[in-house]
Length: 457
Image (cartoon, rainbow, N blue to C red; front, side, top):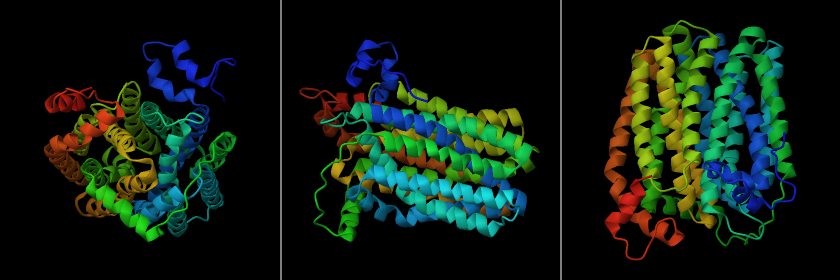
């Protein structure tokens, strides 16, 4: 599939020639490399979500244990927590496209191994754990590499990256993630019910061909990277000092780490809600996850139509409240329709916070520290989740899945309240940076007026 483009127009002229009220919502697609990536990822991510649902259902079918759902989630994500800082330095030292080609090939191999073992009916929880760890090792390098590579895909030849296009690329990337999150679980539920989990893994393994092909077709100018004067350990320390010393990034990542630890592991308990709380089957699991995907997709689209990064700190605050409240009410619900509506709300809050945080951080961070900062972003997003998965599994075994989700949602709301107390200080630091970048007007604008602009849309 190839997105259409006028053969005699330059890439930069497309938005002007095809202007419209919402033409800015897809402005990142004028870059050929991002169009290729967008197409390949749109196919591959559907397979990824099919595998996520199939894996959780397979684990619960084999063991009937909510705790082991948490253990598998932990095994698949703990490598990211341990290796992300090292991966961030490596991303800055090597060709990012080559790194992503290797991670995608290995991820495809992992899915095909799951398919073979499952279709042969010899898979056990031990093989699932081992292959989950393998996928976690891949993700530790893939995620910071992918986030850092986004800026190269929206950089014109012989030019500088366009920050507005970068924010739009992040939003569009979030939209395809969540469109896949909507489509993938629904497909997974149908396939599992018809022929079993093994075919889900086979489809996912095959889907990686699309994203690998898109990466190989890109024309990326090889940037001249200066030979690092610091050791890898010194670079990791420098990156950590920057992240902990720069208030906006430190505050956003702290909130994000809390949300990942306490809120996002609700996904590992979805099979319990589908089977035991709502008395359904794999179709119910697919509907619940799909509803969360609808909310997340709405969030991504709302971010894509934004013309500026102004006001995103307010969106981070609102999304945290939305996410926590949705979890609390979902834990109280025993009605399928109400639960689906609450999953939509929860998915919206989760993705709004994720994409808004990513955009703000990528806008602020200097290029020479991008890989390391995005590795800590990955650490906060994915690295904290395994501990949350273990905690959620243990709490669900002791107090039940509904009470667990109510508790974790309450902690997310408290985190949103804390972030609210930090907003004024965060905006005070961001204001001169945004003025220097031209995002905010400078000159005689007062501090109060600038802060009001930062908090608005």
